[in-house]
Image (cartoon, rainbow, N blue to C red; front, side, top):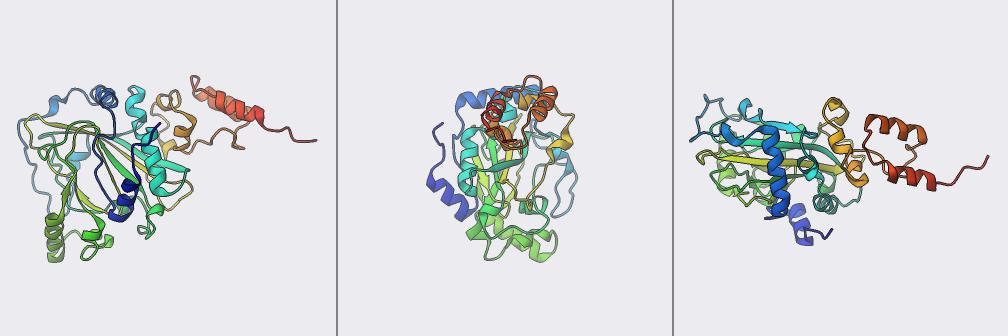
Length: 313
C-alpha cells in the first residue's frame, strides 16, 4: 500500500510533537468504521440539543462521565473498527516516526462523544503520566506515537482536541508541569497554553498524531444533537518496557477472535504475537493457538515452520 504520510509529516511530529493530517483515511474506510460505531454504541440518540454542564469539579479535573463511552478493542463488530488502528498506512507512519520496523500497539480505543452526554472539557495536560512510570524520553523515538483518528466531521462545535506544539510550550510549561493542577502558577500556565493552542478540527478521516509530552485538552460538544467518533491508537518500539498501558491478555474474555480471524501476521505482531518463523512457533504452539482461535489463518506460520532446516541429530 502506498504511504499516506510524507517525510515532512515525520519531521513535523518529531520537531513539533503534534500535527493534523486531513483525509488520511478514505471515505469508504470511514463509512465502514462509522457503521461499527453505531453497532457498538448505538445510534447517536444520546445527543442533546445543548450542553448540560454537570456540577463544577474544580480546577484541573476530568469529569468521570466523559469516559463512559470509551471501549478498548476487540469489540463485537466487524473487522473495520477492530483493525482500523492497525491500518497498514497508520502502522507505516508509526514505524517511520519511531525509527523502527518493529512496533507494538499497546493501546487502542474507540470513543463516542455526544452533545450534552457529559462535560468533555479538560485542562491542558500531557499524557506521559499514564503511559510511563518515569518521564518522557528526550529521544522522541523512545516515547509513544499516539494518534487520534476522526471518523466524523469535527468542527469547533464537535469537541476537537486543542493542542500546543512543543516549541511553543517548552519555554514556560515543560512536561513535568502537568503534575500541578492547582494554584496561581497553574492558572497562569493554562491561560498561556490557551492563547497558543491550535485546533484539530478536521473532516472525517483525518488524524492527529501527537507525543506523550505534548500539551492538549478535550473540548465540549456544543452542536445540537452532535456526536464525535474517534479511535485512539498508541504505538511504541517493541521491547520498550518503559512505555505501557494495556495488558492485552488481561482482556481475555473480550472477543479476540474478531482480531485473530481477520488480522495479518504483521498486524498481529503489533499486539506482540510472534511473527512467522519465530522460535516460539512449534507444531504444539500452533495447534494450541488454533484451538483458541479456530478460524485463525495459521498458514503463514506453518509454512515458515516447514521451511526451517531440520536440526542434525
